[in-house]
Each structure stands twice: as structure tokens, then as C-alpha cells.
Image 1: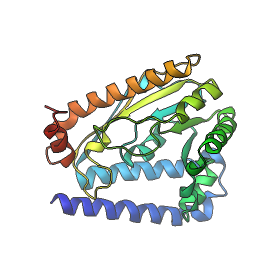
Image 2: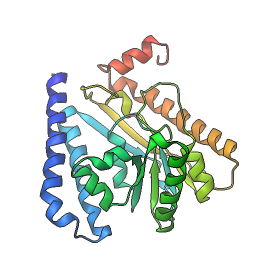
Image 3: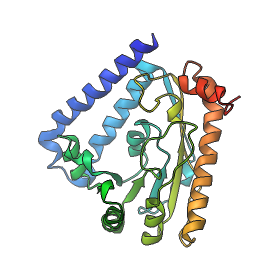
Length: 258
């Protein structure tokens, strides 16, 4: 049953994504920027509905009062699955994602991303990539947009040792921005490099923002401590909602869960 439900969701996820991109292409690129955002948001809502119906997933969103009222700030989100990439669209007015440049070369997806003025990063260039990311992010930030970045640069396994990159600290100091940390537990139910989609209680928690003015070291330590503490708490709290998950079994075998 788990395999069949996972197969149904994966097929529906990719087919509906492709269908919506093709369907909206004739009008999407001619819409004003603010109105165009309604199409990706509708895609996100469809995905959440598919997850709930086909996999038995449930969702909870906490700390909404912590989202800054100012339009321009940085969102630093824990990244464990594709779930948070589209779910985050529902909570921000005009987000600009920091993403790897290779994604811009994907037909349709890359065109949509370009329309929404994301910040592409050529990770192979290292120092140049960091400088380019800061420049492009500054342009979007000045336009009263929210910059969404995944501090570890890629998806990580639930319970894995954190590996925060310097990029988020560089943006924090260069932009003088408030940073909104976000914790998730999605890796329990949508594991990295796994076909299976487990039922369970997905939680996205918006944490207390970190204001500008800290030193690089102070900020990096505060951000990692805040996100990792909350993520560990969410994983411990919701592990029992996913008894089938091989991730939960692994964490318990490693003594990281009771």
C-alpha cells in the first residue's frame, strides 16, 4: 500500500506540475509580476492537497506571528525535501529563491523561475558565486522582496550533522537584513533520495527572527542553534506519526530518537 500510494503521488506531482506549466504558459509570461504569483501559489496548494489525499499527510504551520511585517528580509529555511520549496510560496508576498544555476536550464521550469526573478548561483565558481549571489540578492532585496535561501545549500537527511555554508552569513552582513529562521521535519516523511512518501504530520515552524547588527560569528552560531534545536524538537515530536518511515527506524537505531 505504501508503495502504491507513493507511486500515485509521485506520478500526480510530476504530471500536474507539467500540465500546469504547459497550461499557463500562454498567459503567465504576460501577467504583471504580482498577479503571476497566483499561479505558483495555486500549484503549491494543489501539491498539498495531493499529498493529503494520496499519502495521508497532515500539515501544521507554526509561528506565523514571527514573519516580519516588513517586505524585505531573508528567509533561512532548513531543507530536507521538496515539500518546503513549494510550501513556502504560501507565506511570503514576493519571494526570490536562491537556487543553483543548473535549474534555470530546465525547460519550462527555468522560464518560470526567470519570470519570477530568482537568484541563480553557479556553485562551481565559489568566491565569484558568493559575490554574484550578493549582488543579485541586493537588487531583489531593494525591490522589497524576501530572499529565500537554504543555509546548507542542499537537502539534508533528517538527523544528519548540520553543515551550514557561509552564503547565508555573507548575505546577512552584506544586506544588513533581518533573517527569519525556519525549521521543518519533512525529511521524516519525504526522505532525500527515496521514492517513498510516508504519511505523517509535516510541520513548518517560523522561528524568532534574528535582527541585523551581529558579528558574522555571532550570527552564524545563533542561526544554526535556533534552526537545529527547533528541527530536532519537531522530529522528536512527530516521529510517532510515521512509524513506517525508514528514517525514523534509522534514527531510533542510532539512539537519536526514543
